[in-house]
Image 1 (tube, helix red, strand yellow):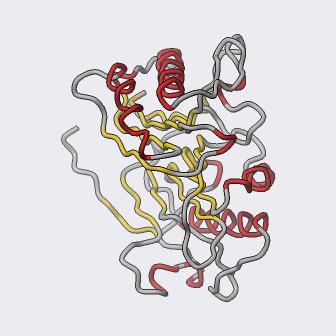
Image 2: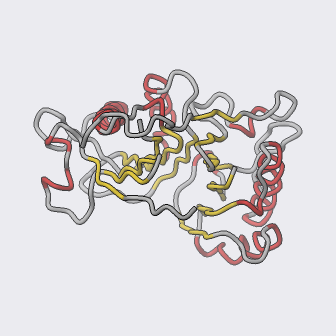
Length: 140
Length: 135
């Protein structure tokens, strides 16, 4: 494959951080990651866990309550960047147990418009004892 | 948008790292579409031999990220242009070791990231995939 620049108008990658007033923990402060990156028309958002946006503390709870917290945060964080849940194109949901999928879905359905975005749900082992991780790709 | 985007294959210059071709697997190292590169999940491969490189988890992460860097640079991109990265670990307890090595490769402005653990093949401790901007 050629390594020559194929397009003089090549896109720039822009790092998106939360305002300093919001909880640093929600954007993964202290970890080698950015809350989101913008590339062209898209926002790529890191996998979010349930964090209290006011205090920055993890909010471990049930699958339903963690889903509620994550999507509440995601909505606010996307809107801060001029995007919104309506502009989400693809979501990946990771659950500590697929038996919990109905509990996640019940909360999830309240947050997204009709039609909702494309989505994949997987069961996996998650860091820090969290029950839910949600990441997405959205239109900027 | 009316213009139809082309889809093209990207490959590492080092043939030892072209695992899909070496092992005749039904995927390619990566695809370029428009301004974006989508890389397949990469596992720790010794760049001199093409064999699996299963040292400590830190070493496996280091080898894998170095191979991702090579593949991106082969296509005219770089680690600095990675926008999203997925890290799959065989053992979720290895997150701290993974993050320490990530800081070596992404000292500033790291990409968006999601990390989780699930079953991997061949004793691999990690598999990492990413989306990057083309060069």
